Image (cartoon, rainbow over all chains, first blue to last red; front, side, top):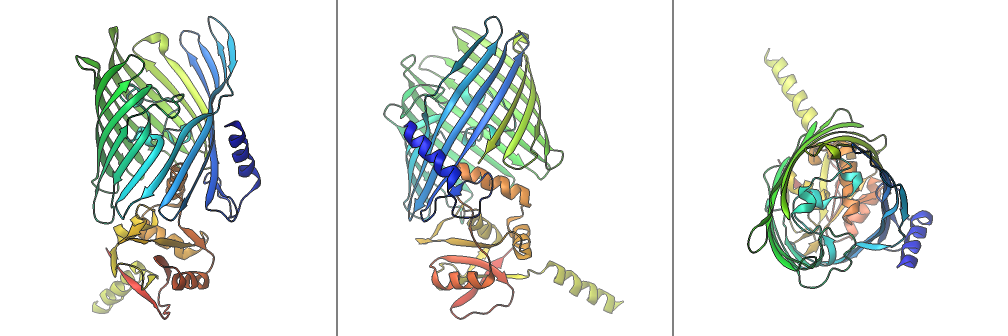
Length: 328
Length: 135
């Protein structure tokens, strides 16, 4: 695995067939293969005097297509270096290379695409472009990791024909262990998901998901539902997601939602606000409201600097987060 | 007064008329497209039509025709488009192929099944035809 990662890194640095657009990967000459990657560093300073610096993401991705087949391989280091200050100072390194995504797509006809492997669970909008460089904030809304498993290792069948229809459908089936559960927020070995997405206009779209998974952490069945909405205007963007998760007898996440607005002050400067609320059963129920005020600076296109203040109901968790991220 | 309205009308239509034609060869499965459908093709949301793989072609980003096409059909500014293709890169989707000259584009259109491209208005080439683009 490490050898493959190093080969991809070497190819990324040394070979380029076409003109290279920073942030859009490069082509390996005389092949339909592209390579690229992304990296993120972040820093958190919490009200309870806990501080952390982290090399969050360092990933190499490769993809290509040939006729109706295409593939995606995304391998990386996550939390490869962490330095913490607080009640106990510590630093850790982790050089384990894990599979972030690894799948093959087959385009059956004009409208149906089958995907097999490990991929981002197609629930909501946040989880479709979850890496730091594309996010409006360094932090992730609770809804994006409390309600459903972020990765699925299985099959996805998607129906989409944007030539004639504004609605897309997707079904996901996992009936096996995760291909690599390192990155998954919930370890699972069964996952079923149905998704419907409607494009009301170029600006407005909405998605509804219902799903089931079996958690190998507590060996329980869970059912979830998620609604997502995205509205994008030239000067601002609004994102909202709301979901709920339950087991056979009771709600384990009775509700979790967020509403986020981001304003493009100029081409380089964005202002972001988000309000989040959730309730989760952790033995006793924990309820929280979180307010986020953030700023993003994009001096050149595939590079971002972000800073945000998070105001939590639990005041010890109030924090400032900052990150730099790049895509290549 | 009548002449002034006529001049203004002609001027308005000149300013709002496309200065490009969308060309395809006989293999292209459709005879006309809406702007929305053309946008879906150029954003790679549509890759097959009636079983034919579609190859959308762009001219170099410095060419004024490309900027006009992106403004009128994609309705996206260069920065938004760049952001779109960076997200597409993460998903394993590439932007349309770029060819440097109209001559190269016409040659590609003549030889590749499913190819589609925009060229300066009025270029007439045997075996290629103008696709009707409706609003």
